[in-house]
Image (cartoon, rainbow, N blue to C red; front, side, top):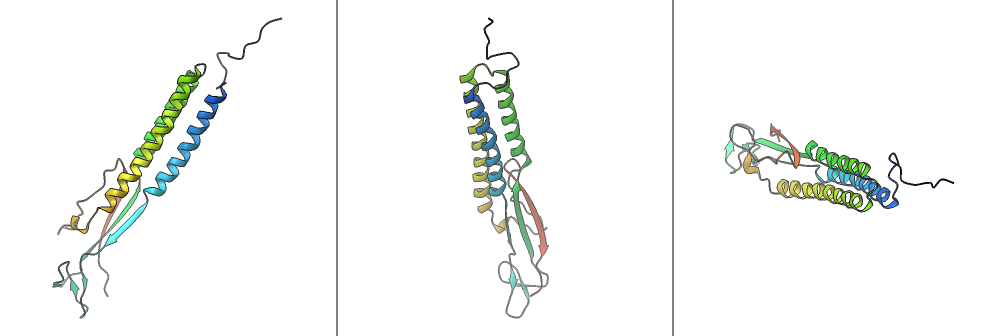
Length: 168
């Protein structure tokens, strides 16, 4: 009788622990990207100035003007760079797991580390984006109609729209 071995060169991820960690990596990646998408989606708008009791336009100081004040609308959304980083980490970890499938402990450690790195990147990006977006003030709008306070595109994408205030 010949002895059968369970480990062959073309065997799939044979260890239950490695399969479990690969599953955790997949589901954690999916959940983190969903939370990242939801956590970095927001908008904010304001118009420095307004109308007085006579229906005249006023500037931010309350002084009547002839022209309508400019309004700013900022829209925050997820960054493609964060999605790319998450994908690179997940795919690299799975490739490593496949290539080192016969060495259980190092493979499990890499899959766990990749899961934690993805969680740290997405949650850190949400935190930075929301703190930065919460600190944006109306003072970034200059006289030429351009807005100077922007969020780094590595964390989240920001869309800036500048328009005239509607009539009362």
